[in-house]
Amino acid sequence: MKKTVNVPFPLNISGQDKFMYQPYLSYELTPLKIKKMKNVFVAFSGFCMNNKGLIKECHHDYPVQHNYYLNEAAQYYYDVQDHPENLVTLDDDHTYLAIHHPWFNYYHWICESIFRLWMVRRQLDKLILVLPEYYKDADFIMGSLEPFKIKKIFYIPNGKSLMVKNLCLPQIKPICDSYNAHQLKQVSKFYRNYVLFEKKIAVEKIDKLYVSRQLAARRKIINEDEILKIVDKYGFTVFHPENFTFLEQVAIFSQVKYLIGTHGSGLTNLLFMGKDTSLLELHKNKTNELDHPSPLFWYMAQALEINYYHQLCETHGKEDYFEGDYIIDADLFEKNLIKMLN
Image (cartoon, rainbow, N blue to C red; front, side, top):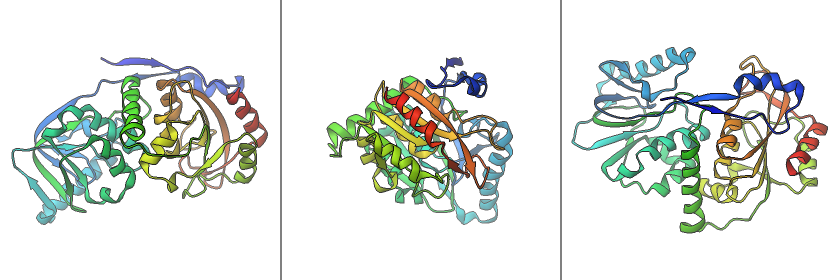
């Protein structure tokens, strides 16, 4: 049965901005299934098909993108028809586990794939995880898998797909902007306990952290020099995620009390922050891609009981929601930072 989750306004909301948030003060949370299936085609990118077509538990529920899902899956399906050598058949009696999907980035892996893995954590000794071969080269993939102590992983050779006799398919959450608060807190505690008490990773304690996208390829801040002077004035440490391993980032964020950052993968790490900490998210005003600010981290902060502050920003260059650079109103930024600290 679906559950309605109510979300409060950002703590520093102004009257003129309320109209952007008003329609999004609640969302539906759908219970997720674990499917055990026979004779499933698993595309290299993670989409799964059987004799009834594309399996809904393997993809998001965005109707406007459904044709993309179908085309992506069909590309791999027809590839193995033309090139049988690109199909690997796993017809033994083991049960294989699929949790990946085409949106390969930090947020979607940590906040979707890992939660699919969490759903079957007590069955892992009986399952063989399947992953694309190139995942081995991504620290955030291998680092995030380490605490699960998975015994068997089958790496799919690059460009090839699978025909699996026995498949375990934990459902991906249909809507990205939705969170099971209980599971979020469980996974957060799981990782924090691993890095702090089992792995005992030693890192500098940082109370106030500003995540910079200076090293990122997109969504940079045009006037970041101006913003850096302000964060320095209030004792914030400038943080570049690219310079740290995944497990080091967990250890660092587990001790952060105040977090500032632009909308993007770097804010995913608020998953590892504690209750009653605070986030100031810098994100875009209305654009041609979305007619409202993304609720992704707003909802996530609420589910984790993290105080959420926001600032709407203008864009520079590309107006695309996912690509355009930011221009931050520095005076407003300092006022919002003070509100968060107080």
